[in-house]
Image (tube, rainbow, N blue to C red; front, side, top):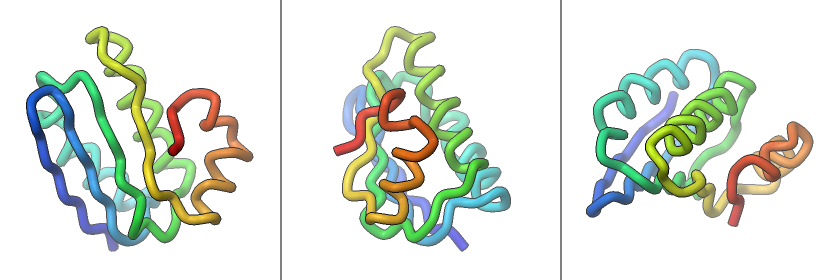
Length: 101
């Protein structure tokens, strides 16, 4: 299960995730982000409470990053990832694609 909290302030969209981002929950996240990304030039993912991310979740991050490139926005940022999620981002090369703080 994944809880998604979206907060938009100006052109920045903050996305706080709580739970597991897998093939099932990534579809929910895509639906939630669909209209919310309009007008966003910066997307910050807060992974404080994210326990796990699968390849489907990584594809969502990549899709958001590509969307930001298309609209001339900033890079996607991931904050507060636990060690497991950080390791996944590093092993898959995502730390070179998105900003991980």
